[in-house]
Image 1 (cartoon, one colour):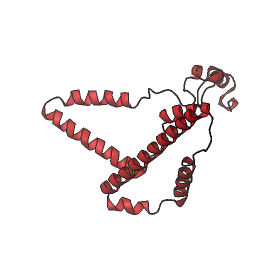
Image 2: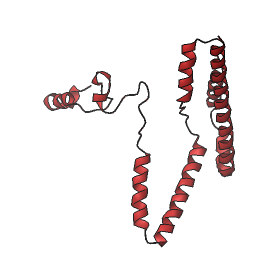
Image 3: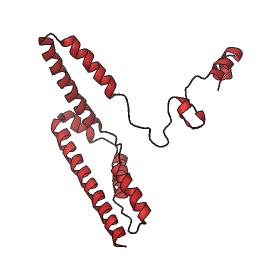
Image 4: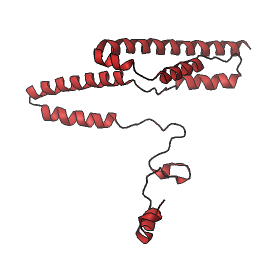
Amino acid sequence: MEAKLKEYRALRRRKELIENTKEKLARTKEKVVTLLTPSFMKNMEKHENDDEVLLIENEQEIHHEIPLVEETQEVASEVSEVESLEEVKQESWKYFITKWSIYFITWLTLFIFFLKLQFGAVFFVLSCLIGIYLNTRTSPRKKGEVSAYSVFNENCVSIDGTLKAEQFEREIRYGPASVR
């Protein structure tokens, strides 16, 4: 029984630590974004929809609930879930603009520096290759996510908008109106 209690307490401490760290990071990010955004953009924020704020508050309340009694298997599974937890949060438009502005200014500064060294073309090609690599996902698919390649999906189900041979054949035989 003590082992279960110890395991539960360790899980609860880990969850609290993760939540506290996320809150600190969010506050720091907001401070940086507020510092770097121009005043006319700050005025635009006042007109945002209040429903978004309510949804965010409700979501935070749900995440703070901690169950009181758990079985050993559930504790072990939750420990593994907490360790592999990746929350995908949507960025605010201010943070997005600020982040990409900083990236662009940094890239432009380095490009000008390499132009002076007469390696501008090399820098441009390498930065394009790095951009292509960074924009491709190498992580595994999320649960329930469909692949663009139907052979990797369950029952070979294709995504919407895929041109199949059967559809192409119907269009040729009966015209484009035959396809729904």
